[in-house]
Length: 510
Image (cartoon, rainbow, N blue to C red; front, side, top):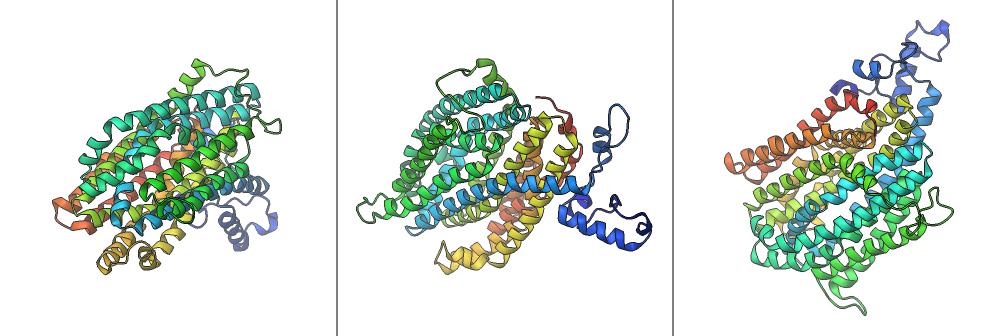
């Protein structure tokens, strides 16, 4: 499987479309190889070929014409690039947030790092509902069942607002003990509490904003989804420095101002998105207060599909909390470096999540219309693209580690350590991109148990043990911890390749 994903050309390229007289020469083979490079084609495994075999004639259906490859490639870009750009903007927003907070000192950066690791654990319900709704909405839209598509969107939004708000209230109850468990120093603890208040109150609306982005992608509006994400991120980036430092007529609120800017920007995006979806021009006009009303059975269906993905995210989020705890052994400065490095890498991770989320909506539509070959091509090509993009991103991070760290920290000691740790972490990015792409393909198909099992193994048998063994246990310090992080994510990517090539997701019904 590794060879299938990382070679530049398929070892058995098709000669379809070539002149018969030229097929015995080496030129067509080179020409076909170039086509495979350009189209990012993937040679399916034997199991996938069996799944794609025509049930009536028994003939294989895994070969595609060049025109179909071009069409699928264009559709992947049409869905994936706007979604990826939106997530890149969102990640840039987080980097800007960290940049301004780092001007105050390492303590605010460490505070946000610790709180956000807890916050995304609390937001498991948000991700669970999102995973379940993507496959249902995309499939119903692919089936051209507009009424059921609208009902699924209403049911998902109601779940997001209620469970997201409930998660925020739970966060107030567990905030202090969790921060203590993560090893927050007293000054970091106080700053994290200041930041957490606004974020937890608005958690339901924040979850609703993410649903707006998802809905638009699922109904064939990826570019509009991009503009909604730009609205949220742009608003936050504008108000961040104004509220943190008290520029002009705005009060100086420090880390509390950063939370107000973030929560306010998501609230704005959610409200605007609700109005956009209820317009008659929308491919699915959502009459929020009219029929068809959200149904309990529809909500339960979303939860049944999404719960393995929720367990996936919850498990990995808890594992990442433990990772922060392991890093905190080496002090606040190392936690701040780890937090800044994660923000930088998160830029790449979220761009790939965005790209594959966009393409998973397309994949779900093809599964809904029973076009399995197209669904396979979407999933496989999206993962291959993710690998190449993350390889390029990792190279940029490795080469530019010094100026990147200088953006956050002025101390020579923190700079040298930060450069070394960031470069170690960048090495796993290509396989991490493949891992993200493989899991999103399963989510687009609504088959979330295999990625859940992989995540449990990845988080608890790889990430946490590797970081602890190569760090505190063997005494290799922060460098050993990050080598453990990198090795774990690399092995996770290899396992995801194997899982995706089984092809089970192509046969799954929602």
